[in-house]
Image (cartoon, rainbow, N blue to C red; front, side, top):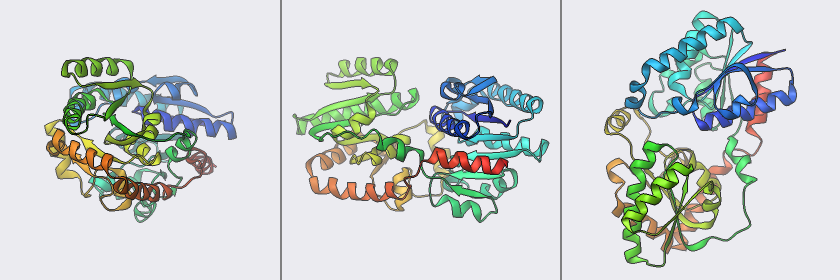
Length: 371
């Protein structure tokens, strides 16, 4: 029987970890999981397990500092539990701020403990020097972008490219429908702070577009009912007709003629569904200023990073104005040629991510490492 302590700190990490846990159990049904994550991981885990996603999934330095004592408490709780359980391995899924610190502490205390990282942190974007440090504390890196393998292997860290978990999953959700040439999709993100900063800009963008193209309809895919209610209230106050739904993001990405998408996983989802879109991102001033000084790559969106060129236009922070977003949205809505050119680039980027099941490949790699 193998025991694995798994840690994920965000909703996407909970999804990725649960997929791998399920695949491991198909191959080794006696495997026991403990750790910290969300409701999906909880289904495959035994006590002790901490469902901490709602509190742990914060963004930005300021938000982390506000609950730092809480993070410290969870950190030392995990060290204590791992000491008592003595798992065969620790599986860390994304969430680098916490997980890399945990990996360092565990390696120092238990040098024989297998430490495996899935969904490699994007240190190549902000601090590549950390790659050599990670090589000293990790036993295996499972990366989801093809260019990452060479970067990590140069440092001596054993690395496997397992493919991107979204590609296979989203292929199963493709619908036999045509795009509505009068529909613009808005995707303001899933976190409250993102939504509160970005949705008002989208409302103002819609107002500008309507003055030039009264026939355009707007639809938003909200992450949950609470956010949908808040957005409906704001849209009603502004007098802008916006259809706000929940749980329809993937459908909207296939029905809309074009979209405005908040930076994050949704931008890759939009690429998989071949939605012509532009990227928008706004964050707290302090977070933006610190990030601007740390990030060493010229793009924020992963599609542009993978293509190594500006395939999708990015509107970040003070550049994310209603006027600029409206102009780009109208360009995509009005020009079938521009939309098709963008779709061709999106297809090329998605093709580079592989088609084999990432969770299955990751599970096999983890079991090989444990043997």
